[in-house]
Length: 236
Image 1 (tube, helix red, strand yellow):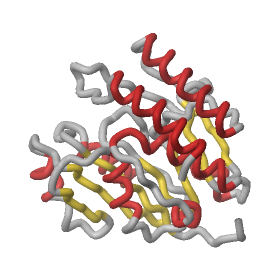
Image 2 (cartoon, one colour):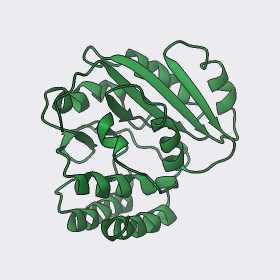
Image 3 (tube, helix red, strand yellow):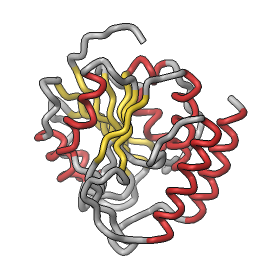
Image 4 (cartoon, one colour):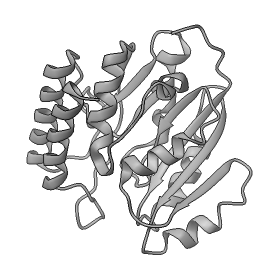
């Protein structure tokens, strides 16, 4: 990748039925240390059916926030594609709208790119950062999916399914994303590997939720992830 001057960070936040957390997430993103970069906050509501849209309506007139509304639920990857189309920064970070990922980790995620060492950074939940102790089988599933992805991409990631992914925007411009729902993680991993991007991992904190607290991903999404790993390793 060519040398690039970094002035602006675009934070893309896909949202679906997160009325209890989205406003706090926006506040935390605003307060996060972006190491001197100006922040552009892009929020994509993926057809929420609770009070999320009403919360976001109060935010859309703020200067540093762009709110986009999809007419119906299409999935996380579809919301991200819409958000990426509005990116104006040289660096892009994906921020979930729940409180599982903490924007205080922004500096650690940004440093490898700002130092000119990385094109893509993954925030790993398994490299020693503080994390809430939750579901054993989710852990096993994440490890399995990461291992399968690594076998087919020849990477040695510890957390392919992490929600914290950071990209130089020129990388995203070279990728045509096709998946919907939670297929984004294996698809984008396969495609940045194919591009030969310099990929770094850094430890992050992780405050996972239970299903009673609003967690949405389930076993069907795991099966879809397996399909996406195999599909994008050999096709597209």
